[in-house]
Amino acid sequence: MKYYVTTPIYYVNAKPHIGSAYPTIAADVLARWHKIKGDDTFFLTGVAEHGTKIANSAEATGQAPQSFVDTNSEYFKTAWETLGIQYDDFIRTTESRHAAAVTNFFKKLKESGQLYEAEYAGLYCVGHEAFIKESELDEHGNCPDHGQPPEKTKEKNWFFKLSEYGDFLQEKITSGQLQIEPVERKNEVLSFIEQGLEDIAISRRTAKFALPLPWDASQTIYVWLDELFNYCSAIGYGKDEAKFNKWWPADVHIVGKDIIKFHCVIWPALLEAIGEKLPKKVFAHGFFTIDGQKISKSLGNAIDPVELSQEYGSDAIRYFLLRDIPFGKDGDFSPERLKERYNADLANGLGNLVSRTLNMIERFTPELDPDLPVASSTLVQKLLYEAGILTENLDFSSALENIWQALGVADKWIEDNKPWELAKQNKTKEIEGTLAGIFSILVAVNNQIAPFLPETHAKLTKLLEARPIKKPQEPLFARKS
Ligand SMILES: [Zn+2]
Image 1: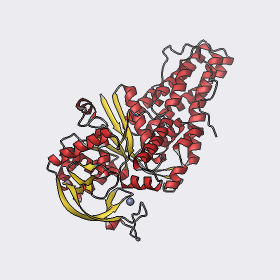
Image 2: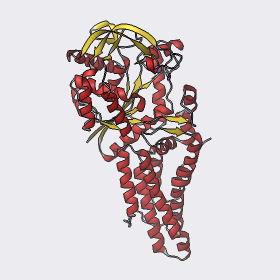
Image 3: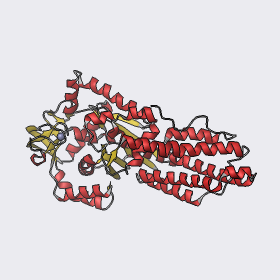
Image 4: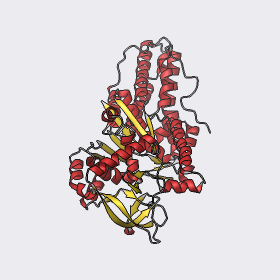
């Protein structure tokens, strides 16, 4: 089976923050899970580098746009490396492979007869890189998300007949051919479609640092469509047909809930217009506040995932983000709770169980052959089997909960059987039975945590594979502060 997973591509005018780390970690876990399962897997992430917003940010720092994006895209690569993210490709929209694919895409779109030229008057928010309605502005006439007035534009643009795709989209979504999750988001998209779709401008006259429209030099390609096409350009659209046909359609686009209309309405309609298949699933994650406050630029930078992972280790950040907030729901990121969970679940939970178990084996039964088959716990088997299914369905929080419940079974096993008491009574067989059983839970849990906690998995694998078994020389989790 092939599996193709994507993240949103992030604007390089801001440094990577906890909000962009979140879907990237989720996609990484999913990709690792499918790779472990044996699926032929492709994990794409990248950055959005075109548009007026980027050009303005570059100008503010006194750099040319290209050198600005060259520098800033590296921050993302470094951050993802620090967080243990193993993507298969990293697309930048200023790459020539992307521009060539987008040009092909727009030529196809023109040939489809779905475009026309018209005069358009509207309000454009540069922060959004999107048109905004008068009714959406705040009492000062500003975009409520960006605190800036939109630009009044009146220009001739090329339009796409999105209004003709309502029935098509409704059918694809209700039949499940295009899955939208969670269900709240699916309902949101369906009700948006029911209100009637309007045609959309696909080009702009005044945009800075954007790709030219292939047949009209006075126009540039609307950046959002340029960006959406990254999912196809990265896998060789118009250039490497075998590669494209191997990976397309995407099995899941992971996106933020704020960009759901682009991914569940505009994107599938454009794909249909050029005769390509629709993605199988769009999964929208929720947003989180930080200590109850909306993430602002300054707050977002205060919670730097790279800095946090230098203190706690990247696995702890991966664990916390996916464990604490159910994927798809809104939540709150609290540094205090990160610390609590780190101590309770990782250092004192998994870390402690590993060191206790291996220590007891070394002391009480150094001859133990852990490779002998043992009677395994059916409860643990059930919990871990379900954890796999939950991971596959992007319910990461429940998957981790199941895995930690399995650790609880091992803890209880120790408490109920007290190997140290058995040792006093020289009950060798009972000690061996207990410790081999607990050891087998650790092996099974170690397999399940591999996609979530890759560093811990590597360390634990070494400990569990060493013969004879010895107690760890250093703790599995050690916080540097
Ligand atoms: Zn805005």
